[in-house]
Length: 344
Image (cartoon, rainbow, N blue to C red):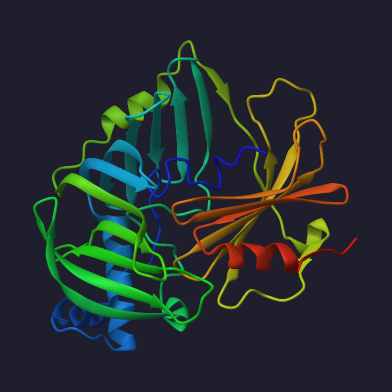
């Protein structure tokens, strides 16, 4: 199957922001803002992560994003407005096939100008830079040690540098650069056990704040003359209800969503192929498990691949084809595949 859903479309670059997050209580924010020395207690660690969450959800910003992994570079222009409880976003992919994406709250519209195809739908559960997953709170710190390790500059902004070191070998370390004034995440590196940068997401230029201007985004979402508009239906479900389960949980990971959707919304067929997607998170890293019926024409052989921090495993299981992908070590991906069981 195509893995574009699981690859977060442009890697870790922000094709969506974790909106609708709860605001952080003032005492926790004060603690985070005051943590100026290396070493962070668990409560202060929670405050750092929640401050980053709040900034992604409630800040207005615009700039250029860059994603790099294994020497492969991708870039995008992003404009994000927050106006009270309303969120608006425009993102333009600058490399390869032209693509634009617009968001108003949970409504997402993706345009491919060359083919005049538009896809409308709801934001999914896979959170992208500069947001962190909604579960990035105390549960994250069950799996990671967080430390404030210094102060630097990113894209002309003063930042605090945070290091998240995993407590086991099931996940990678991460280094975060958060704007000192607002908390907005300006850079995020995923690190190998040896400390090498596996992949990096960063603003190479960014302006934070400014008056929201949602009208151009709303107009673009309505101006679809000449476009073939696809509206794939994603249905929420439960893994167990679909006849599947994990025999044992992978330590630190919990399921955050499970949906059934068309595999290829653009395919002109009366009965589109369906895929089941379950997303698991440890509060920072995310793993997607895709399950679909085996098709000898599309599924040639089992394989494992990697790109930067992302590892993918594709295997046949009787009448089914399983794809597991996540920004975790291959051993973690293999655990998910091994623990997946067909119950009926």
